[in-house]
Image 1 (cartoon, rainbow, N blue to C red):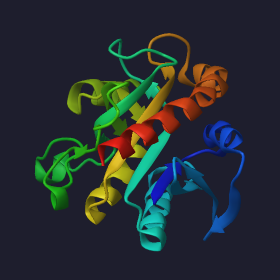
Image 2 (cartoon, rainbow, N blue to C red):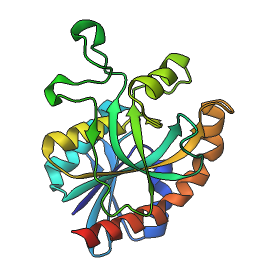
Image 3 (tube, rainbow, N blue to C red):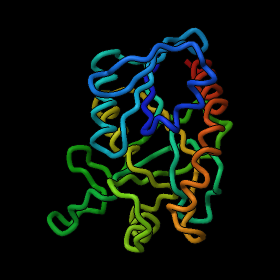
Amino acid sequence: MIGIVVALYSEANELLNKINDYEEFNLKDKRAFKFNIDGKNVVLAISGIGKVSAALTTQLLIDLYSPDFIINFGTCGGMNDSVDILKYYAVEKCCQFDFDLRELDGVPLGYIQEYDSVYFNTCTKGLDFLDKSTLASADRFTNDINDINAINNDVKCSLRDMEGGAIAQVCTSNNIPLYMIKGITDVYGSQTAQEQFFKNLKTVSAGFPDVVINAIKSILETK
């Protein structure tokens, strides 16, 4: 069984349209869908925006369905010229750059003591058709220069979103393999993040079905 966590229905809608044969239901207070890909049962849950909502939804999927692995896909922002707008990336590690105990404990930005690390590793085996990148998550959507500098210079990531780091923490705690695929709607340094996001959300979301279905098939071949 495969679990999928997606923040927004608009990001998942194109995949659901391609699947076509699905059952919609309520996963507690979350909108969710059951369907089949390549002979495997899949439950896709719409978490809503933010780390707490994403973590809650991921734990619900694990508790109720015991998935063999979880996939998180969705849109993200690019932080520097190492990544390209409208392109999809497999995330190989991620962190939460708004978790900050530097002044209290003298640890690096994003360091979580219980895990003895800044980063959570994700799985990329089977995702060789995608370029790899790194992701920083926080509970805010902003172009604040302090955030940009923190992502590029402190945690040294090239992508940012509002869910991935929390999903990775939950999967790590539960020893569940996590695959993460991100499509870039906006890149820092051109138009505002908001303008780019709303301009490109539909285009990036439209490309997810082929990328995600190919990823699932490829991952299953490695099992």
